[in-house]
Length: 392
Image (cartoon, rainbow, N blue to C red; front, side, top):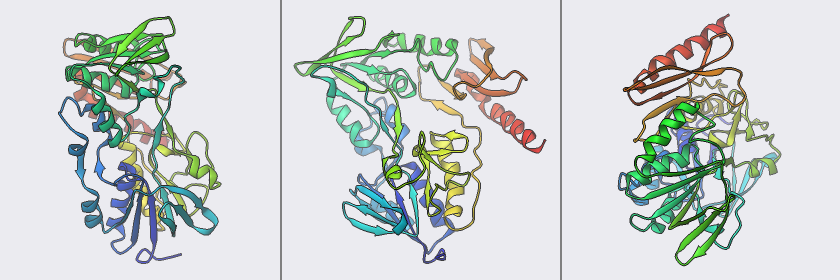
């Protein structure tokens, strides 16, 4: 195997996962050859900031925190921007890109996930845009007239955060979701009701138990028709119905793929020369999106790539929901997990909800407003529980 000084590691994807593992690789192997393949410009920015950018007055350009050229210089990277990877030829350790073939000793797939498109009829269906990259945000912002009505399809994490951001920026969001409350798959009904009430007070309109059946052009505006016949006129449509891991390249390369690219505890795929990280990876515990698991995975995958297998140690994977109108922190519970939510505290300072299984073990929580300050203590408690079970 090539030594770290001569090792050529290629990373596909210029998001937090790709740059996260590159930072760790450069820290551990100052002389290794590192190449980043980016479909976009390769600039570094915080993708979670996309759903809070309007209220902060951010343009797509101002969301960039570190330009690609500066990232290349600081990490001594060869950045191939504007390149699409067309195939991975695993048995030859070569990738085929729109800029030509590129050989690798180790490959890290950090391609994230792509927005799911809802099945919608009508001549304006393509006006339903998703915001998952800087260029998406630039396009969406350009479509927004001042104070306009914005239809949001989906009341999950992204849809709810955008509703909060738009309402806080003087727009009029209308949210449609087939479930019964905001964040219905993540929080107990009482927490969903709190989000709903806080955003309603700021002008957000909700249509639950409904889906968008069609979107029709209405000049520069659009007219959406729900499945119960309700008509919603709007100036822009945001689709936030979820993400699907980018797995096509890996599947075509013969890697093992399920919901995402299957990796072991070190981030290695079914090919010993290829690793995967971030939203496109399925760890032994499942798919782990969000910032915290990405950074934890990067710290382990980098030494594993360099020849020292290192198991990923995920901390409690809590999430800060960016709803300033109703601050919330949650530790989600995997769907189908046996147990129940209970309201532990609820007063004028906020609420605390805990999810426990039949033996009383805490598996998840939701905190609102001032109660969010107890996040660190709850994370410690859950980490201590895990350590105790591992030692037993």
